Image (cartoon, rainbow, N blue to C red; front, side, top):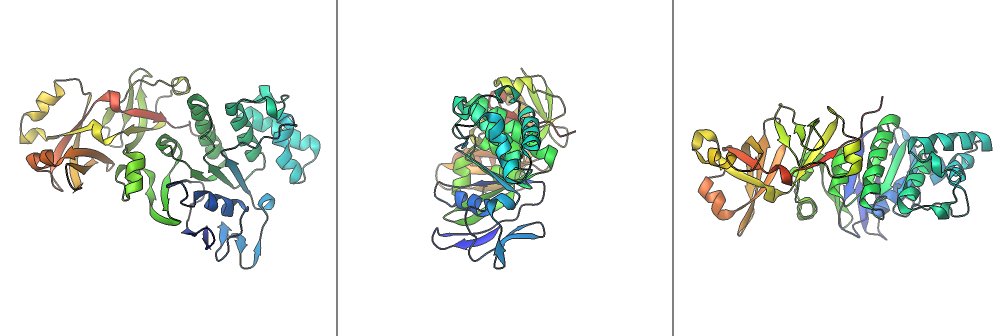
Length: 372
């Protein structure tokens, strides 16, 4: 997606590898919805180009209308037609693409089953709760068999339980259909559960991009640091719902807080991909055992996690400083320490340390099971 909109003061150049999910984050008014509209075909990419694989859907040589470009947009407002049944809402897209009424309804029924909404098929659109309408909107988007799914904050207006359910549905369906996904969100948990990569948009320009774990663990912009304040660690789920554990790439285990959400507990599966989120203030830093006895005193208390790490970066001014630590498998851990603590510990790049973290401050976000 490459375009410049002088009227909206947005100029972006984004590349999303096929089958991957890119989270587009940024302050309100930074241009995120403009990017979604250009990709979905609701706004002409003046002075640029939108290409899906080798197919140009918007450029100097022509403009492919939204209904024919293979992009489905799921926005914050579900937009369910109130006067139609749920089944006919989902069948609407295939009918517009030329499918017969019977074929469209069969496809709609299959998509409703896929999102767990078969029981809603006969209801009118105006009889749905917010979470139900979000499920129906997802089924309707996927019934068009898109190559690209654009999610413009679709979970912002629904409750926490419905948000988690929709998040898992999106992840599973994206994997099953090998969809390429552009996700706009302000929710770090959504980035952790869904995104492979992150791009940060500010004042209409991409100011930061890269793999999700790197951007969230060591943000390069003030906005990303404020948004996340969070380390994201990826690994494999083990343990139990009451004592979940994330096993990192080098075998290190991170104990997390008990799973609270019913959807998370019901969907608990060993050896499935997951991510751990923890705020920088959860990270205490001690000298490595070879440097002194401090770590033995720390582990005698309540913290469950002691992780060997290497200092990679120390930055900041004033009373608090950001410390970026590299774990054994190469993932990054972000802590926030006082300047006095940094000086006392002699923290500098290359220094071997031990990070101590309370399990109660580690939030685990299970990803959806892989498609079979």
